Amino acid sequence: MKTLLRTAGSALLMALLLPLGAQAQSEMMITWTGVPGEFESTIRADTLADGSQAHDVYILEKGRVYFMLESLDINDSVVIKGQAYGDGETPATVQALPKPDGAYGTTQWPGSFFEVYGDAATFRLEDVLLNGALADESNLVFSTLTARGDNQMIEMENVVMANFNWNMQSFGNDTSFDINNTVGKDYPSYVNGIFFGGFVWGGGGWMGSFKDLSVTNSSVMNCWCNAIVISTHAEQALVDHVSFVNIAAGAFFHRGTNNLTVRNSLFYNSMLWRHSTRWDAILWGDDIAQGPLGVMNLASQVAADSATIANGREYDHLNRNITWHNNAWANDSVVRDNWDSYPATWSWDGTDADGNAITLSDTTMYTADEISVWVGQLGQDLMAADPSITEYNNVETTDDLALDDIYTSMMLDRIWDFRDNENHDRYTDVWWKFQADGEKVTVQWPMHEDLSYSMSSPAATASTTGGPVGDPRWSGASGVDTEEESVLPEAVTLHQNYPNPFNPTTEITFSLADRSAVRLTVYNVLGQVVRTLTNDVMLPGTHSFTWDGKNAMGNAVPSGVYMYSLNTGNQVLTKKMTLIK
Image 1 (tube, rainbow, N blue to C red):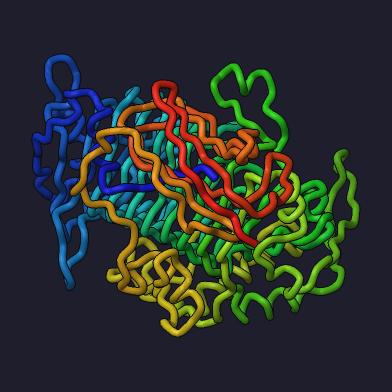
Image 2: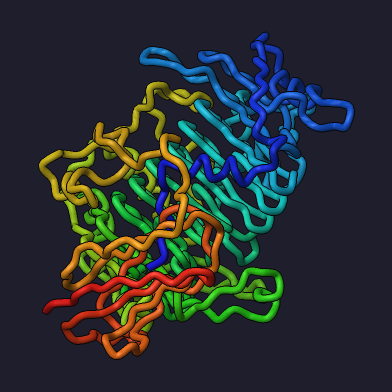
């Protein structure tokens, strides 16, 4: 399976790929005065004669709230970071405030704090709290940032985003996201709406395309749609040590997510909507009719059309390269009890296409136990048809998350308020969310939410290292190494597979010194091709693929010695491995 391994040299790699001018680190402190708009106006005014930014790094004071009146357009490579803060201190905060005419100034739909336009620009946010709630309680800003140019890199390190429908989305081509140690929370969803809002969206469809996507050591909680939407595919995508908690429509968009590895992550109440009624089957086609989707929600993907191929967003819907391993999941008693409380049928007044009054109805199709599965029947059928979709070492964990049940209960109640008649009758504004301190437009600090769990639960030993899964901030465990301590590989290296001998799966790892066309192939002792694991152009760094002991037709191969060969065009390296049963 294709994976993107986040190595200690990954940040260095991105620096090598950036234009030389983008590597400068001239800094400017934006001194807080309390004047609304000083944040974005200072950055706009800080330009050279050619219009480019005079500084590369803009620093915000910790413990201060910078009120932002309108979107900030980003055309060059820029870093916005807060001063480092410690226990008892609050991070530098950017919050929305309406202009004198009463509206927040956004440049174009959907409306973001940051609009990133510059082609090949890198935009980095670090050590900041971003609050989309307008300080006068009039409304919310829709999203944190929108990538609109081509070949951009969006980076986040130690960022908290609250009170946005969306956090990040790509409307440009070949956008890369590198998100680490970051939290998305307090998603409101729009009034009378459902299934629109999440952590990071893109990867084709009506949005822009993804190149590389990496989300590590992070949390997404109380989210109203899919947390991560890869509409068709990314070239490479990794989700590692992430906690997905109280997600309405599922952690991932079920039709996309190609070229994705998900590991060491926690999925707790990750499909609150339930996806289990006759109305769902109408809305989602035959997906629901084949059975509950499960936590690892997957659905069939249509073949790429000519327009998709022409604009560089081609993908192979029969070779999706998806693997989920060493994750833990649970649906707690609050959720199960709510699902089991659904009536067998219910009805409401509606109208037909011509505006005539009619009675609409819905019917529950599955029980809570039938819904609470890791892989539903549809996902199992897809894995049987496409051997590049695999899952292993995923465990159901215990019902012991420390998060206050009220967060879950309020989301479930708002879901039913919409579900009973496709309309919100009781939750009629964006301020419905639970806030422990009762303050609607501020973000409580430290965060009231707690996603920790018992260290005696299955989740505590489910990771690839035998330790806890999920965002390490809640367990105190170490997560994905992101320090720039190592350098890129100096040569092409093919490592011995592990484990070896193996049954049923083994990892094959190799390193590249340069961007290379790569073909990784498994052969039998007669030299016949058993399976091609990848045939793609890959970036410098370390890459890993899983072979599940099956051939290209998805059939298990017999015990014996097999060869695996790495061909980079200029070099061919081969090693032996042994499958035992």
